[in-house]
Each structure stands twice: as structure tokens, then as C-alpha cells.
Length: 342
Image (cartoon, rainbow, N blue to C red; front, side):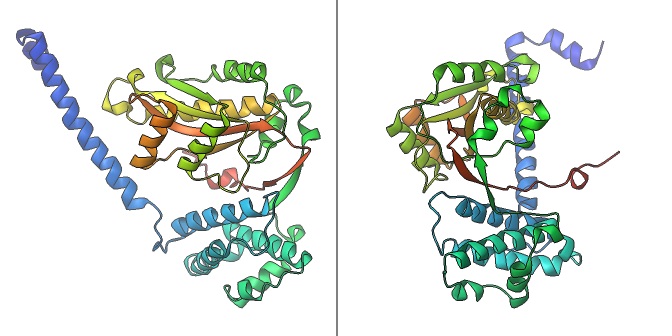
């Protein structure tokens, strides 16, 4: 018999459970501190000058510009702050990566800037003040950028609702490859019957020990949708979606500090299942983060009556596909760039 088992046998059960609780608090606190320090040590900062973290900031800027380019109500001259950010990160990347001319993020920067230039020139808009934000060689390289010369693209393209009619009969690979985030929707009502089918599909999502902690708040009250998205802060400039889903995780489904990240894992898996199911049933959707500040968290909980034991994971806006709608290219990395073979 081990020493631990011998001590347990002579220790009253309430005291033993209390000691286990103290040990859990100490070890859990240590794990959280180490995790937090690791995150803050490696997070991409505004002052970062290494290749990986410059790419992070550049990718963020590119996607922000893509969102403006994919807006139905395209506004000439938009995004000056984002353009200045892209210019800075591309210049930093030239210093951090000796192979920057082949760097996919650098090429995406040229591609998205090329579309920005082309769209404004077609409208006869004077870009001289925006041109001054960029080093001349970057601006000129963007002007000359041609997709046929490079495998990398960025910007926006037009998606047609006709391409989604037969989604339910498509194979998974085809369905996944053609799913894009859509932020502007048709005026058609979203069928509750279809949504219920979507939820049924998502229920096949795996969860830790099949505990199924994920919960979904379906919001159709237009006033609450508007208030919720105003608190969230990432959907400005768009008409309100017909349906807004909030995915949460019930913390009561987890048992110790080692599982502190599991709500996000299970909730994220479930959310992706929802997105694929929505696509299969011909509904457009866009995931939105729920990385709330304390004030945002409190305001959201109050608005939607979310209990303290549930953790917000993400929003998903839902609606019908318009006849045609511009969407972000959202170029993905190559599999070779993310896979380590051991």
C-alpha cells in the first residue's frame, strides 16, 4: 500500500476532500499563471519585429481591408488607418524576412492593395494621398501585381446564391472548400424548421467524455440583436442579420483546473459544426468573436440573461444568401506551412 493510500485511510473523508480542494487550488493557480505568462511572452505586439509576429499584424490588416472591399456599400477612400498599418508591416517584413518577395503574407498585401487601387481608379478617385503612405516600390509592385504571375490572391470576389442551391447534396470536401463568411443577407425569413435541422447535425460534435457542455442562444428579436452586436463591436456598418446565435459552454460540465480551456475547445468544435451545417442547409453565416472585456461580458449577460456558470464562446450571424454578395477571399496558409512531421 502506498504512503498516500495509507494517509487517506486514516484521514476523515471531509478533511481529505478539503485537502484535495486546497491542492487543486494551488496547482490550478500555478498552471493558470504559467499559461498566462507564456501567452503574454509570445503574443504579437505593436512593437514586434520578428517575422512570425509581423505576419500576424499584417494578416489582421489585410483582412480588415478585405472587409471594406467586400462591403455592398463600397466607400471610396475608406481604410486610411488600415492602409498605414499594412504599409508599416510590409516594410518591417522586408527587414525580417530575406525571402519576403516569396512570402505569402507579403504577396497578399500586394494583392489586396492592387484591388484597392483598381477599384478606386475605376471610380476616378484620387489616390495620391494614400499613395504617399507607402514606400514607392511597394505601391508600384501592387500596381503591377497580376494573379497569373503569383499563386497568392487577396481582396474580395462576388458570390452568387445560385451556387448554394444544391449544397445539401454536395460532398463534405466541396462544401468546406466553398464556405465563406457572409455578412450581408437577403430579406427572406430564416426557417425555424431549417435551424432545428442545423442544431440536430451539430449535436454530433464530439465533446470531452461526451459531457456536451455547449449551449446555444438563438436571438431573433431585432432590437436585442442590434444591442448585442453593438456591445460586441465587430459588426459595424452592416445591416442587422435576421438571426444571431450565441454559443456558450456550461462550466458545470467540467471537473478540475486541467480542463480550464476545455469550454473553448468543445464550444469551438460545436461552432464549426454549426457553420458547416448552416452552409449545407443553404444559409449564409459569419462567426464573430466573443472575446469580451469585463464590461462587455457583464452587459451581454444582462441583455441575454446568461447565467454566471456559462462562458461565451462566439456569435454566429445567420441569414439567407442574397442573389449575389461580395465576400473576402480570406486566403489560407498552405498545409505544408503548418504541418510538422514527427
